[in-house]
Amino acid sequence: DAQESRGLGDVYKRQALIKLTDENSNDNGWISSSYLGNLVIRQYPDFDVRVYGYKKFLDFIRSLNIFEIHSTSNPKNMTAKTYYFRLK
Image 1 (cartoon, rainbow, N blue to C red):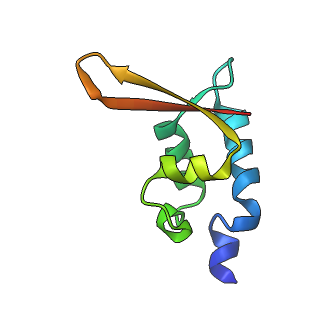
Image 2 (tube, rainbow, N blue to C red):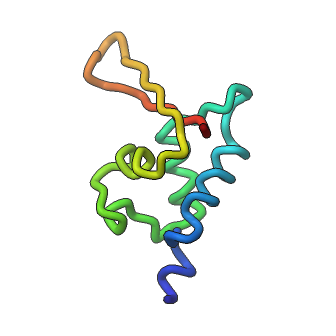
């Protein structure tokens, strides 16, 4: 339907995320969750993880099973984590 063609439809979501990650990751292949999320929103303004049944971008990414996921903690706030993704 029209929304599928404008947004990040099921058919294209993996390919789009792979392309965005490949083009924007660092030399070791890692990209931060926030950076990838911002790239997706810029390219697909209608994108919303809730459409796919998830509350958080991280949970949506995990469900795709195409990324390694690494997290780092902020020494000043151990509950705040930064997540990074790399294609498997």
